[in-house]
Length: 98
Image 1 (cartoon, rainbow, N blue to C red):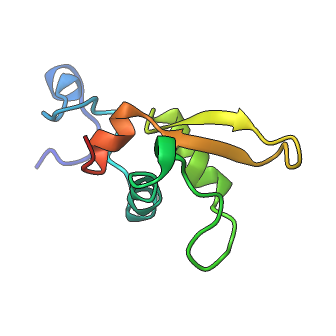
Image 2: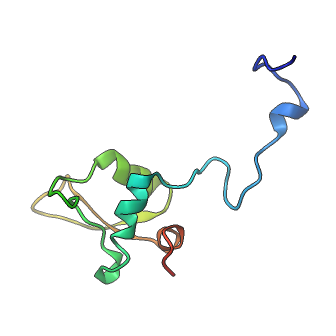
């Protein structure tokens, strides 16, 4: 059987069907939970801290920024390394907002 992982031509050109780009998977459970917290905040502000008071994982925030689900809102002069973000229209859509 030909399941060796080496393929050429037609098989390599196949892409999975879907609503968005095949290169952009949906959010993880943690990303979805973080994004959803912005739905009921003024301007879609996303929290800097989780529900346990711990700082939100910066890699997760950057992944959401890279995928267009969140965007930087403003720079925090007291903590310039903290990303203050808000939901984008696409971010709202992906977590069930308008």
